[in-house]
Length: 210
Image (cartoon, rainbow, N blue to C red; front, side, top):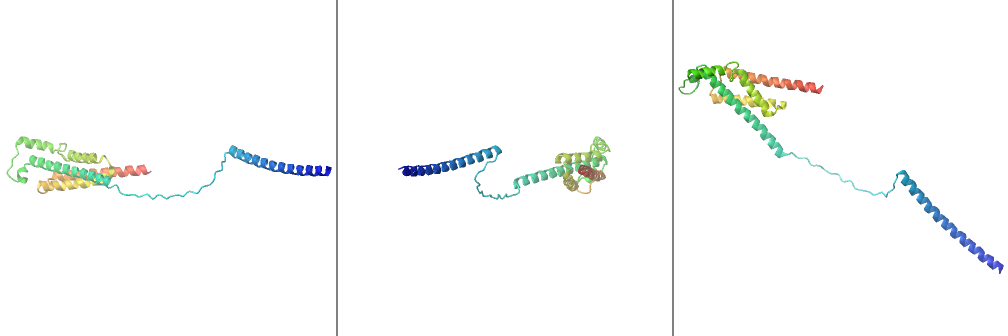
């Protein structure tokens, strides 16, 4: 009877030990997991399951803004047309004043025209060196108008120069032949002032680049 009791007692002890061991391992595992989680949280490291993502390549398409291009071209054409028209009017008017001042108006104009004394006197004042239709003031007005049309943009200097030349040629056609000397001098004065503008721009660019 005592052997049976001992045997039972021994089996119960073995079972109890086994159960204790399993419980201890489970507790140890749980504690270890909690410790790792706490340590990771304290160190700021968070582990998340990795996931693969597909990276799509976006292809950008570039195209001309035809509407803006057309507008800019129209603006440029309008500027040059305005200058051509102004030059034609100024040079033609200057030539007319010169004719009135020098008694050659009736000779140059088609038909029989005469100029009264008062008109001749005023014309002579107008084409004088400091007169409104003189070389200096007429060329100044052309350059000022060209500058105003471009907003002072130095890149438009040559564009305006060509517009001036075209306007001068049109004035010759309107006049009906070779323009008088005062108009030729005005042409040279305007070209010289365009050269000065271009040179000033070149100097500015050179200084800025240093």
